[in-house]
Amino acid sequence: MLAEIAMFIQLLGMATLAAILPTIGVMCVIYLIYTHRSQLLDILQGILRIICWLIICLVDGKAKADGIKVKKI
Image (cartoon, rainbow, N blue to C red; front, side, top):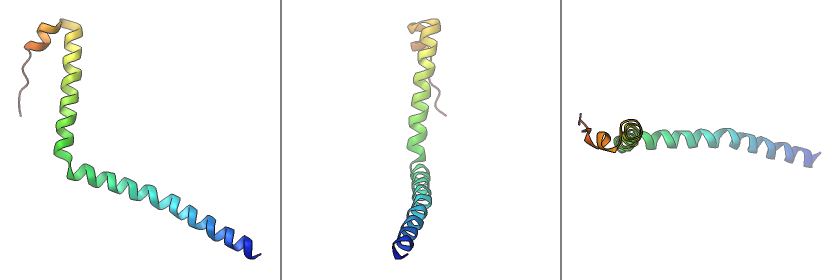
């Protein structure tokens, strides 16, 4: 009987950790995104520019893709 109670308490603790740890992880990720959002936006803009350049290069050629200037906002 005592072993079953101990196992129940152990399972209850593991279930609690399984519910709490992902929540803490998500909150940490949201905090990091919030604090470094300007750097992340620059990285995303760079990735989008690379993708757009690649599409233009495949469709119209490298000279046309190199000729397009990026407008700073």
